Image 1 (cartoon, rainbow, N blue to C red):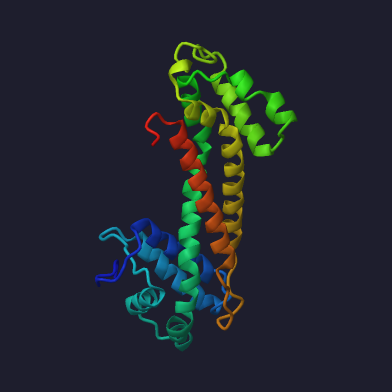
Image 2: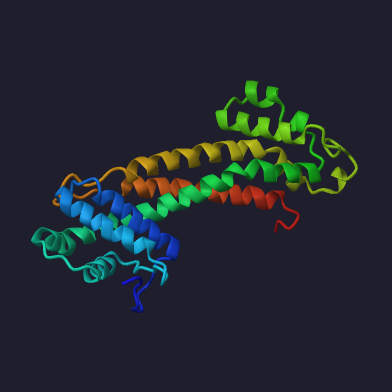
Length: 249
């Protein structure tokens, strides 16, 4: 089967692929089943992700997803049948939030890498003087947070030579909130980038962890904490972007 056909709440196609990938990674560590059975299940999951005739849209509920996967494959091995019935629901309960969190962290890392370049457009539009607002003395000496230093240096480099840099032609018509938010860009872009990269490293480590046996369970505290930090950082970046925008409420 390529996709679930019932009316239960579904994961998106990208999320479904992420869940199957992480489940395959977990099984391939051969801690939950003997090597032969682990590789056989992993191969079946890989085949599922590679099918192209229908989109893969899986149930969001762990029990329903486990049932769907169990019904989708036929196994004669008793150990595999027991695993699919008793252990798989517990594994999937951990894997779903881990997969979605890791995917979100990856998207956030891609976006935050472009954040300073977007902010530089705002700085140029608002005629912010980069040499003063993002000076190396201000950040390298007086507030030397690594992320802030990197963000300020990037903004200085982008705006160097800009004709709008520090111009008073249109600065007077810009709202104070927009200008201040743009000047303060390194103070939220820097820490945000650092936190997102930390979350990505945490997720990467967690993706390579698995239960030591079918009887053991891992809780989701690490994933939940990381996702909470990620969500907070994304809100900070969104607020800063809106504050720099002329359409800010």
